Image (cartoon, one colour):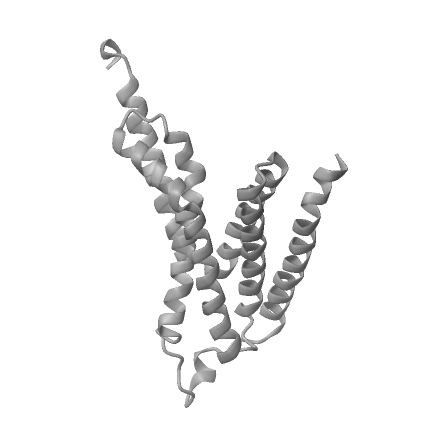
Amino acid sequence: MQKNIKVYIPIIITVLICLILIGLFLYYQITTPHDGPEKLAGKPREREDEGGIFKLMGNGAILAGALSFSWFLLKKKLKSPFPIVKVGARKAHSIHTYTGWAALALVAIHGGYYLIKEFTKTDNLTGASAFLLLLCLAIYGYVLDRKKKKPIRSAHFILSILWIGAVLVHGGGFVIGTGVTMAVLYIGLTWLEKKNLKPADAR
């Protein structure tokens, strides 16, 4: 029992740090006045495409993370009546680790740019919390590849859910769009499978 608890100690520490970072973000959002249209007169507006490829890398990290998480959903489809779905599930498993590390690399580059370019930007606080959770998630995944133990597997899954929550706070609309797309595809596929498995006389 004590050994199992030790597995979760790094998660607890990481989550506490992330809660502090998100708490600071909320504090600054509430207490710091934001420039309204009238205050921007004579002041150049920020371009929507500011950050360029580095902003795209943040979106790419979300997509890579979504691909990695898709294995959790698709592993239940290994016995699908559709051969193409079985192939897709096996592919999701084979790229799971690589897409996870790709997400971490993209987040590091994306976050590094904004820390250098706009160190005082409050969004960096939520970005840092998402990065810490993803880093912890990657470490647990690395250990899990070498030690197939249930507590480590559970910790890996918990961290993935926490990361989704943190990146939702940080990424907003793009994260929601990605999640909704995945949900619609999964629900639609499940519906087709159930429809296909119905007895002929019940159709």
